[in-house]
Length: 455
Image 1: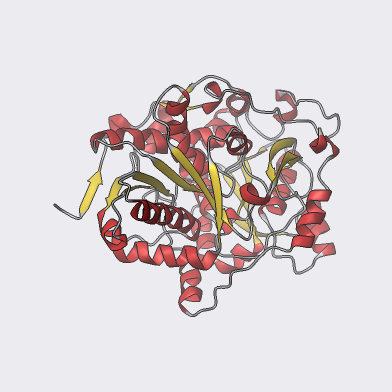
Image 2: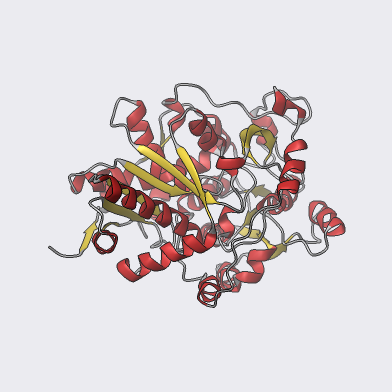
C-alpha cells in the first residue's frame, strides 16, 4: 500500500453554508456586555466597528448561514483543501492509531486565515467601506486580510505585534506585496500605543495591544471598519468550512475520528476543525474526544479564569465571558506569535466549561521537536502554531500505543512554516528557550478583571 494517501474533494464539495454551533449548544453563550453600563450590547454598539451582516452573524442562533456565491467562488482558488493519512508518521511512532491531518497551508497566504478574511472583506465592501484596520501576531492573519483587501479593492492597515514584526520580516513583506501597510505595535500612531510606549518603551507588544490600536483607528474613522482574525463568533463560524470538508473526506476514507486535535490561540482554527464534529456529537452522533493545545507561556484555557474581560489591553472593546489571563497580561516572547493572546474565544471557552473539550499546554521546544519529526516523515514543515497540534496528535498516538488501542486521530495542520525559518534556525542553534510567564504579573492581571467578572 502506498505511503501517500490523499483525500481530495471536488469544487462542488466546498460547503455552501457556514456551521453555527450556537444552534446545538445545551446552554446559551453569555452575552457581550457594555463596559460602561454592564448591560448586554446591541447591534448599534458594534456598528462603528463591523458591517451589519457580520453583526447579524455574530448574534445568530441559526445552524447554517449561507456562504455568498462570490465568497465561495474565491474559495475555489484553494478549497477544498486536502486531507492526508500520515502513514509514515504512524510507522515512525509504531502506533496502532490512524492519524489524519487536514492541511490548510495550501491557501495563498499559507494558512486557514483566508477562510474568514475573504468573507469579512466581502461584507465590508458590500456596505461601502473602503478601509480595514486589524492586528496580527505571527502574520498569518495580516497576510490573509491583505490578500482579501487586494481582491476587493480595500485599503488595509495591519498592526503587527512588535516581537513578531522583528522575528518575521517576510510576513511584513508579503502583506506589503498585497498592498497593505504593516506597522509594529505598540506604535506612536494611536493613543493606546503611545500609552503603552510611555510606560514601557521597549514593549515587545501583544495581540491585546495591537487589537486596541486597530480598534481605535476603526472607531475614529467613518470610512474604516475593524477586522478580527479570531475570537469572535462569526470568525469561528467562517472557519467551519475546514471541519465540514474533513467530515466528507473521512467518509471517503471509511473512517471517523475518535480524537480531534487543534492548536489554540484565539480559537479560530481549533473551532474550524472541531465544531462540525462537536455539532454531530451534540445532535446524537459519535462521542469524539476533542483536545485544545496551547503554549505553556500563554496558557489561557489551562490556567486562565473564566470571567468577563476586555478583548484588548486598552479597554476599547466590549466585555466578553471567556477564559482569560487578564487583559493587561503580556505573554513572554515566543515563536508561536499567533497564540500569544490573553483570552480565548468565548465559544471555545464555553464548550470547555460544558466539558465538551479538554485542553493541555506545551512548551515551544517540545512542539518544535514534534514539528521537525513531522517534517521528516510527512515532508511538510508546520508553522510554529501548528506544531502544537502536531505535538498533541503525536502524544495521542503514543497513548494509543501504550494502551494497545487502534483509534483514529484527526488534527488541523493550519499553516506551513515557510515564513518562520528564523524560528527553526534558532531551534537548530539551541537558541530557542522555553519561557514561562511571570506568576506575579499574571496574578496582578487577574486581580484587575472588571467587577462584573465576579457575577
